[in-house]
Length: 216
Image (cartoon, rainbow, N blue to C red; front, side, top):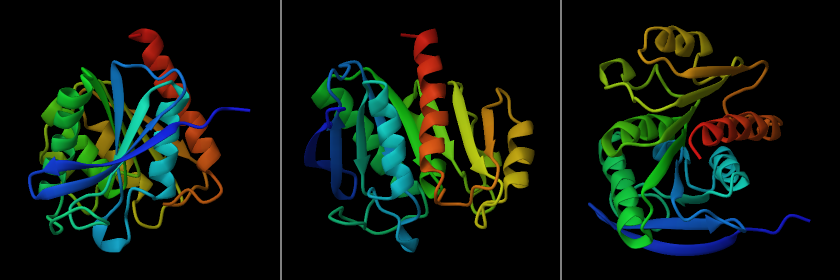
């Protein structure tokens, strides 16, 4: 039976007050990498407890990498109010800075779902992520095209039955990017990947494992 990760709840000083966070360390966790996981839209019920975000955290833990989920400003016990992705990116950057200072972690992965994918995308450039995973990036709601393209290895996972993020729009956007991300379309999957989380975990985990094999 697989041993469960150790769980630590904490409050991180952020630009708009305390940021509620959850660190999960798998058995045999590496000391040099942490995976920062960003949740869906705060105004539509998004929290760090979202099942897709939890799945992304588990993907990291499967690779013996500690995960850190956190609530954006105004969500749960995190201070502040919604700021259209700008302040939320500042929150994510503060989390990475805290990990580097307090945990001594030099490398980080930026992972996000939906609105969190937009923040993770911006964070990857802002703080120099080693890897980026964006699940259902909301290209119709936020203008990704005006943003600097991350230079790190990058995975886009998207369902083709997503009623909130059009997969054709995602494909059209990614085809124009240099460097281009790796794109994986899950046939029949909708926005929240109901009944498909195990598949998403396997797909993302395999991609992370392959990148670790290239750069241990």
